[in-house]
Length: 420
Image 1 (cartoon, one colour):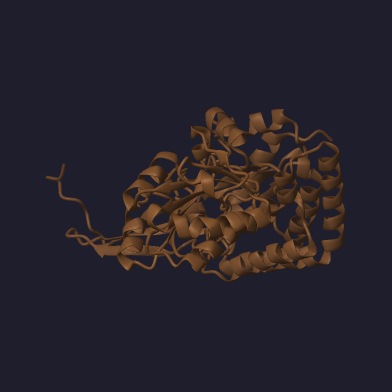
Image 2: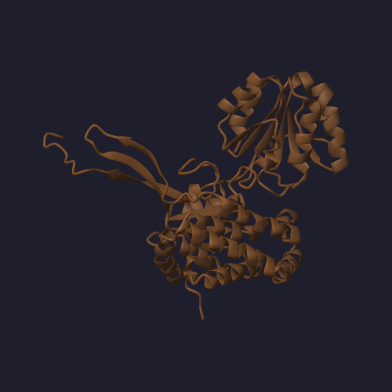
């Protein structure tokens, strides 16, 4: 039977009403059932993932994408744990806040409600299939998941876990649709279905996100890339700085919260950069250095303007010596992507000023950029990272997948006839 995205979207729209009114207990039961199925079906998922990996290697897919694609027992366990954490969180739906009495006598508040139907368009990231489904369900939304061809076998195996859980609780399977057809025509049609779909969240490379942004008739959450900076201030503890640099750059290079640029205050450069050079030589990190820092790196390459914009997603980094705090902030303003920025300093005032003036979704003092992740920030998981500020900013959890409506409590009050 030929898959129809238009028909699937209509069914999702119908199913959205059911999940929107589901109580917290039932939603949490569903999440617990999904986590259980991830454990019970682990072997089948890994076999499916092996098929995807073999195809990726055959097609010479780059190593960073292969890393995002790869599932292991440990990664599956982490995905299941994230679902459990989401289940344990307070239900955002139905919460009423900011209730205030008006001079007219009415009481006005705001209630959180689901967005409706959310579509995810993503590449070789099978974890998104579960993370997105779990967060959308927690927030009372139906979801359409369109993954890339590189992960199709993994995604369909994960979809089986979700639909087994839905069937166990006698819930409409159209609440979660995992698109089985990776033809680009399906994605293009999905982006036109503004009467059925309320929001699109793309996750992947900059090219994919720009394509969705340019072609969608539906509002899009944008996150083009993650050019994350580490600024080592003159008052930095250099041992902490080296550890944060090592973790942020070399632990996992394929993710958007890894470091891409190092900024070093000129007053600590002579002491710190030899340590950096030794670390990067040992870890085989390719260095693009400014004129003032190039001499510290035996195999360094002179940085160009393009390097300050670069999201390498590899063992590669750009390095610049700055003359102070203000120049570091100005560099970030000019070249940052609004994802994550870090200062290392023992100066409390400098740390707070950095947090205040740097306009980014996540700003840190003395912590690894790798903590810029929904799970690490207390969201259980993230459906994506918004750098566009509307309607969310930063890693998005369940609450970011809701909106608010005004609710009014009265006792027969009427508005005066003299009112405008």
